[in-house]
Figure (cartoon, rainbow, N blue to C red):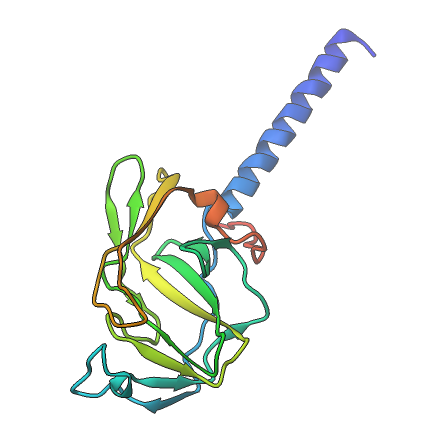
Length: 203
């Protein structure tokens, strides 16, 4: 093979690899939003006299959305978290094992994803189908993995490293409401590993 032919072949291979990498990066620029559904039953709504220190005022949910296993990074010492980078929002799945038939959860509305480089805070918009700043019971889900979907504003593509920050809140005898902070989390490491194929962008 002549030198010119070899150089041409190398050049073509480089172009093919570059185009392939561009296609992959285009496909993976965004994730599809995570699957979710409401609990099949809300047995009791929150009492109008709700108090964190009175568990009889908590709302009760049965048959929540569950998955076969935890996926993602274990953060804050218990749940597994994944970050879905979509165009309209940033979705964070939080998956917890219910150790008992009755187990309460609480999501602080001050939860923020912080751009580790610039300090911009992307604040929690909602926890789909569940309240914030209110303890609620998940009933009859012992040993199941319950998954919640948290919704934040969309993260710009330039944001590569983030912090998860949960401010302090109310406490009770078995829930201290303390501030939680996980720093230096790589967005790519948090994104789901088993992504649904996105397909090509056809214009």
